[in-house]
Length: 169
Length: 302
Image: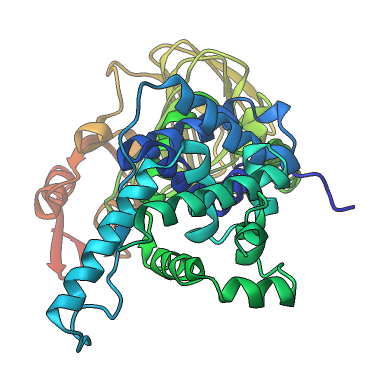
């Protein structure tokens, strides 16, 4: 068993920040769809952790951060629709696809984008944390304080719903 | 077919490559498979907006710093700093480095001592003291040359020199000490002068002087501060050799005086700013001729 790390030490605090801030930010963004609001949430969550540092053990710091962000978000008013950035396949110049294909491609991406935004919050979080942040189901379960089974169900439903909306394009 | 991928975690397991070979093979045959595949491929191109990691951290720092500024420096750091400070001060106390201040030809120097007392050093003079002893209340220093002291009230203040010791409790006085000349002038308060043979108490306006091996003499004076502070050096019935010695110190010159009587008594003052004028004020009343050549002066009778 290694030495106990105190969250109150600034080096430990910095370590936690560099490790979790980005995924916390993404998590907040998948919920709120607003980047400025997400930055604020990350900021508030870390300040809250600092102010309560004596009560938080290092191993629980991560789940504290996600729980706090989640709660802070729920306290806020209705959120915007989540709009993600995406790159079209092939990039800008290297494509030799026909204009029709590119049009369709663009249309498909927009529809998918829209469909993701229309997912239930719980499903969208899980889906995007897995697809974009490459989090495993277990990691997502820890973040959201739910079971792995629940994560798998949400994932399944999310994918199913997306196909129903975009499948026939 | 359809039923096979409708259990409520089927697609999750597919993404995680947790399907059995049979499940996967049959799933790949369905029309939905391609659609799911397309969606998953498309999601590779999605990404979340950029996060200003550094900027947000700086904001957090700002908001937490002023609340718990001490916590950012771990407690053990204070302990470490304290022990280093203790170690240093102990070493410093035990070794007690000497502080020395000195002046060169024609220079003057004003100093404030650790207790707040002031010293004005005349040319070619120096004082030395141990800082550590001063913090223990022992106000002692060594003087060579001439110094004017304004002492803050407090414990005994001592000026040591080769000819004796001056101790006071808080006053203003001037001490001049050269190998053959020792003079103390008291401008305020009370001063005790002590050497191997005697002890004298001086009050305001009294002076103590001892030259060569002669016995000491007491005198009076009227000025309220030493003339050298105003750029003049003054003497009262002083043998000429001490006057010339002082002149050498002020102007960094060599004086050849073998052909005159250096024991003639001189009363007067010379300026510290103009050598020619200073030589005239000394030589004219005593009927002495002088010739000045860069750094050396030759004196002869008229």
